[in-house]
Image (cartoon, helix red, strand yellow):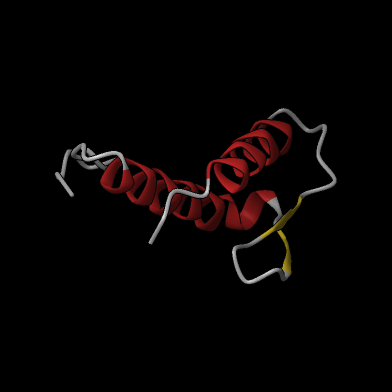
Length: 72
């Protein structure tokens, strides 16, 4: 899959707002659906960011090192 840089940027910004209490807590995913996140499921948003980062790394011919040090 191609790099979805705008989605990645939006998701990162949403995560930052969520973690700092300034968020509407919504992000539009790659299917065009709006997903609402709360602090309770912030890990899902972090996983979505990791997925987008891995896709961008792959599209750019780089390896992606995940949150647990795994190389994708």
